[in-house]
Image (cartoon, rainbow, N blue to C red; front, side):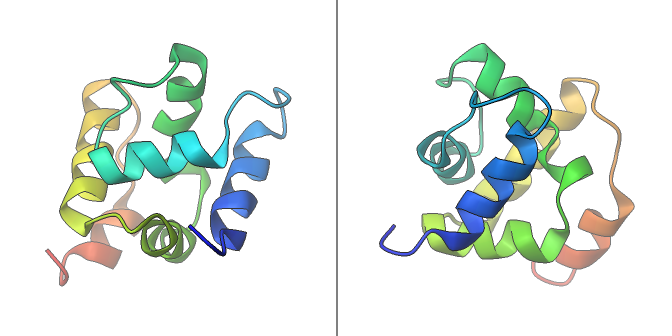
Length: 99
């Protein structure tokens, strides 16, 4: 992660209302692993809101910076749905042709 401008932008947005809870390393880890399972619960809760809060194009740029596989990113989205987050049609439409 030499240049993490997009990860930083996403983290700043997710932290905006709560202070410095989430780090770019945690977001990158979740994108790489497709799960928040090994991340602090407060940071994990913020990551669960990623797809509802962040534009799909920015999420994809974050995934590229984190060197995360799109299938893992999609698994992270599915995990957020299982955690009662709302579905995000914009995300689903953005990646439908890529999966």
